[in-house]
Amino acid sequence: MAKKSLEKKCNEINLSCKRITTQTNQLMSTEKQQEQPNNPMHGVKLVTILEELVAHHGWDGLAEKINVNCFKSDPSIKSSLTFLRRTPWARDKVEQLYLRLIRKKK
Image 1 (spheres, rainbow, N blue to C red):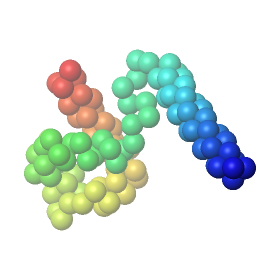
Image 2: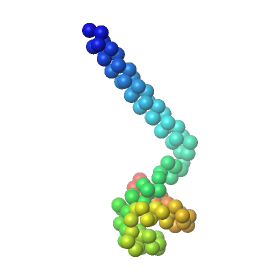
Image 3: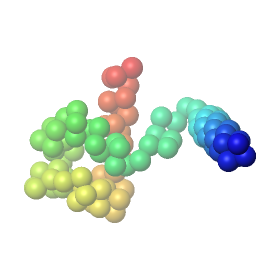
Image 4: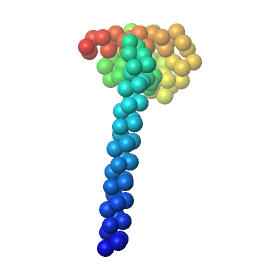
């Protein structure tokens, strides 16, 4: 009897911990949104931006819109991320294209 009672208590504690973790994550997410509510780029990773642009335009489409070799010659996410992280003007163009894509979706 005591073993089942302990197991039941442990399960209740685990459920409580999961609920608290979920609530904490929701609050943190809400706080992040409140920090910069008018900045659509806040919290968006460069890899996410690039993956969405490739999914929408394809590598050829990206190469047409932004004239950089990492989109033209043997393109990959990894090589493009490396280039964009080291080249502010190219990253800026990618981010601007992403913002236009977001506006079109709305």
